[in-house]
Length: 296
Image 1 (cartoon, rainbow, N blue to C red):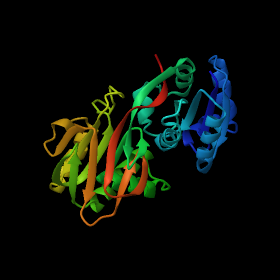
Image 2: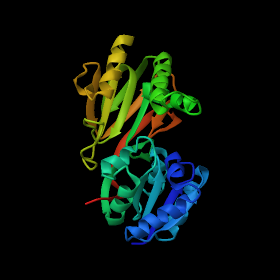
Image 3: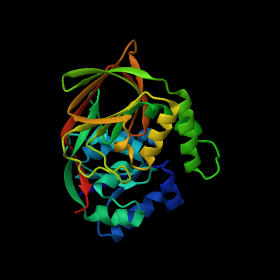
Image 4: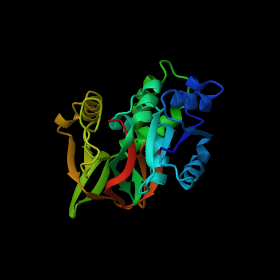
């Protein structure tokens, strides 16, 4: 199989492992696993160009090394094409990699990818743009924005404190949203502090998806309540008890349109990347929209 490996040169985990020659380290690891590859090291702003060139080279598979945001760039370029996407998980959450079954340890991930075969999975869309795992607004977009603000700060205990600081800032900022939801043609009004749309359904423990080809969106609405109730909901999200929380409503759909009165732009956090999207937000499912390299 003709395989290209594209590495995000800014991925911290990659730099920690690869020292002065991350591309050489990855190339040698794949050769040792019996899968020769062509490795390309790209700066973040050049990854889309590297992906386009890999597709033009008629590579059968492109393995991307980075976090969920880097994977999202690859999904956008490879969706609907015959090229299979593989993932070297060099990010913080690595949501899609974990759900596909890619180990998080570097050597194990290389070995798994060297033996993996293409498999079709679903994609979701927001305003016709594909995403691989989740998209949220309200509290979810605010926590993503706050995480960007604290990213460069030197905090004790690293990312764990950063997550707590980000959540605190988000709770202070978030305001109740009066939303109109069109769910498969049925319109309803909700008042919420958070809304999350996921590609297929999540289950505990660890917020994983047992299926990536169910062909549905799952929508989670955090209804507006007191601050204490919001904190309880946040704790339930961490401990995987959120499906039993009466203030968090979940339902499945194939198409969902989200509108907010007098708002033409809405902050969203989609697969780890924050953006202002044009309202209304149109969510849909694209069944079997992406080929991925998955372990047997």
